Amino acid sequence: MEDEAEPGHRLDLVLTVVMALAAVGTAWAGFESTKWGGVQANAYAEAGAVRAEAGRAANRAGQQRIRDAVNFTSWLEALNQDLLAGKITRPSGDYTPTPGTLSGFLYERFRPGFEPVIKAWVATKPLVNPNAPATPFDLDAYQLPDEDRAADLNAQADALAHEAQSANQRGDNYVLTAVIFALVLFFAGVAGRARVARTRFALAGLAVVALVAAIVTLATFPVEI
Image (cartoon, rainbow, N blue to C red; front, side):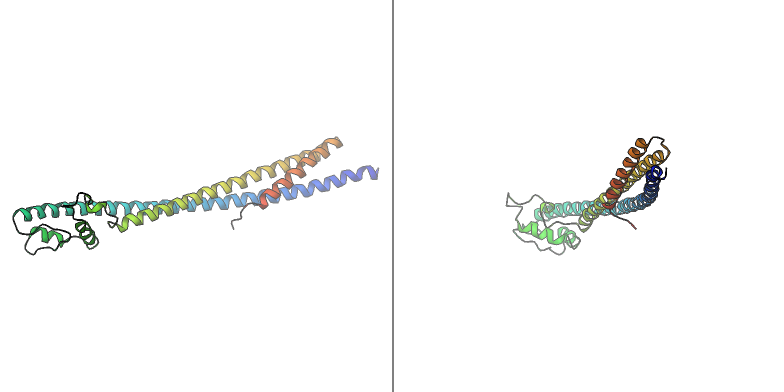
């Protein structure tokens, strides 16, 4: 009788160990899923803040571009009037503002970052060269710091959003592993109550296989502490 009962006792011991490991695995998977959920939320929040700052920088750049365009148009119109009035000579590769003229007055009020672009555009001789850029805004030299900052911030926001998506996937992976551990507990629990020995061993085998698969899978996941 003792020999017949021995396999059953050993199986009960195995099932107890399996259920204990599955319970620990479930708790760990749930903990990691929560931690990665926090990483996801923080990354999305930071991405939103960075993207908002990018929007503000883009708005400033747009406003600066409009001001530059208005100032350039006003200067070009004043330059034409001064040319017609004989107050200045036609620019031919360079330009020096003439004191006492409207065009000179407007030129000296270009923002510091825009004046070199105007000089580079005048150097292309747009009044006589048909291949010259139509406006200074077509030159590579025309740069707006806020526009570059907006592009950099948007790239940062995209990277943070990608990080959040990765964290979300990792959290989902841990949840799936917790489901597998739950199946282990289910198979082990049913095996412990089964009356037929063959059924008990079959369910116990399923529980052990599922447990090993879950533990191996869990070991491949990144850990967030």
